[in-house]
Image (tube, rainbow, N blue to C red):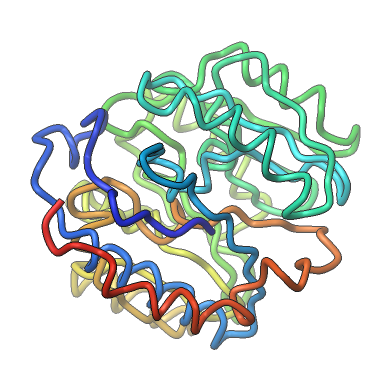
Length: 302
């Protein structure tokens, strides 16, 4: 995870939530980030903290670390190649900083590819690879080549405004097994959705949601064990259906980072599955007090 900097603001306005370039409250954004980090820590998660660059440099999208890329193996990280102009410089920054933070070799993606945000991992041997809005079709073959041979993939083409797979698909752990939460209308055609569903339903129960819940970022909820960290605003119907699956639902306020910036809980996390341990100097647990003490330095208007 990477905290927003005191200078955090909307720059590109490249998604349907940020397109109006609203004024933001960087202090509240940092409070939202800390609340998510605390929730993950409370559930037993370990977090490596990626610092943003020092001022006056500003990478406003770095906070959405699902777009950083993907830990291919415990020692190799594929760094994403982002599509929108104001985020293009993130690749160079990540290639420079991730090796020392995580103790891995970092390599760049050649194709335009937006990282874990376009990888829906159903289980260790099955991944849906989305493209069509941000990630390009060439990214699919590049990721497929990097995956282990036993991993099966299903390319899925999305349509606007569902610019990443994690805006319309969410693999969730429940007491009774894996769940694939999905909005069917996000796919470029009915046939595209049928193909994705046929691939997913052999590995997970399918939970289709409404357009309203999809636009409210329900599929950007973060699954952790039998808990689900979700943005506020889920419909009563969806809330009831998720709770009926035995999930412990915890909703958090993301009015700045999601409501204005366009990235919810899943966008704010890059899952480092397979990493043996977080280097002590970069762990959230060791740095929490320092990060909390920085709040007064964040303005309330950005």
